[in-house]
Image (tube, rainbow, N blue to C red; front, side, top):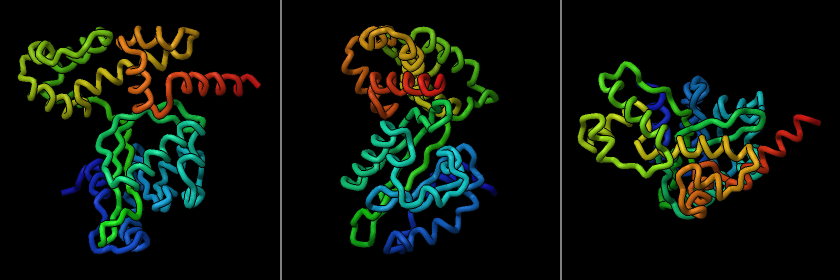
Length: 265
């Protein structure tokens, strides 16, 4: 039975245990290169201990404006992404290499040069040699998928999503949301992930940050944007925005203004 694309890409995060060096691991990953290249909604990459690309799929190369995958090899995210974003992605890679921690289902807003911002779920896994030393990173960023509208619970959950989107300034009340869907909190969270591929909290976060990125196009103060998006604490808004988008709200606004200026020239 064929495996779904997202299962294949997640399985790829687990490097062959027998491989002792990054080059040996890459030989195994290369066997699946045609599969990775056939996933238009999944970015796949392997990086070395210096956070440089050692392998990428066609999707990542194209989104970085390259026709040839080899154009990214030996470069860091800082070299190929818009400067402020790339710096954050490289720092994230280096932290994983230094600490050996995983990154699982991180909701992120990615900005590629010449493309509209896009939401994705990112997973990164450190690669270890037999002695336990981290010798690289393997990861995927999967585009946020459309809702499973045919799921039996969709109509009840859609009403909950609409409530979150219309009241995103308010704190999340899981008990109230579960009651709206006539489910337990555990059922609500489980079905949310099945249908929308997000948790209720991630839906709230995405809704708030969608609103924030739209407001940052205006001249509203960042503190006002934070309040309009449901954050009573400006510093909490800045931390959450940077953790998800990769840059602070002020830096994001600067990127938008710079892009708008370059288009006029």
